Length: 229
Image 1 (cartoon, rainbow, N blue to C red):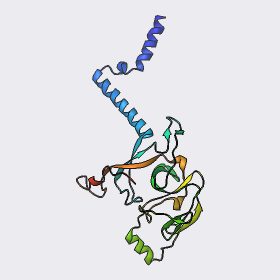
Image 2 (spheres, helix red, strand yellow):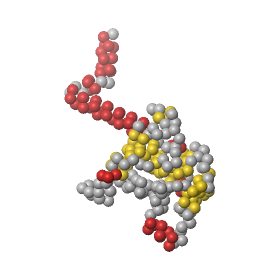
Image 3 (tube, rainbow, N blue to C red):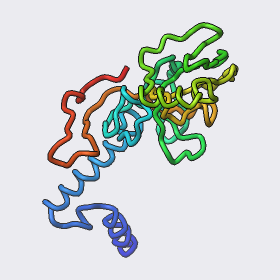
Image 4 (cartoon, rainbow, N blue to C red):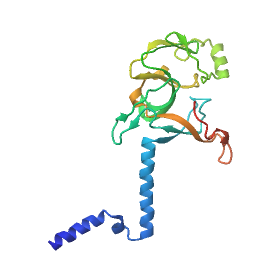
């Protein structure tokens, strides 16, 4: 019996840091690190997640080199270790959303919600129409040089950039586009976004640095803490 008790104590001891790491200072540092990793994982998965913007598809709203926080609860509260969300909230037109690229889910995309389920969307000469009505898009950007180039080549009505649809958006899907309309791979090219795959909503810029500049310059401090809209 004593031998079994001793073996049980040893087995339990292997699961305890104070047995594995006798040095108290080192043990406390490791415990603090483990705790920090757990908290960071919970925050990133269920509250806020950081994203770095590598492309200009959302110019001028989001610039290359911006670092943003996205809220992971905007469309419902995730249940830990499941795909279930409680207190679901609808995706609204104009929301800047985070979702896996439909053709490669390992890549996160950030775009703006333009069309909602059940709506008929059409693009005519760069203008978006929803159910036949012109959509007001103050955030849409058409790079002047690109526009002049397209006009010179007679591409002002070419599909799918400047002319698209009409298409009816299925239930459970949305139509997403980048604000930089001439330079964005979006629903015009690869189709609708499944609402269930949307993981978060872009909220705020927490850091910004022009990747074309050195580490000693190019910091866009005026963009820090700008809310995305």
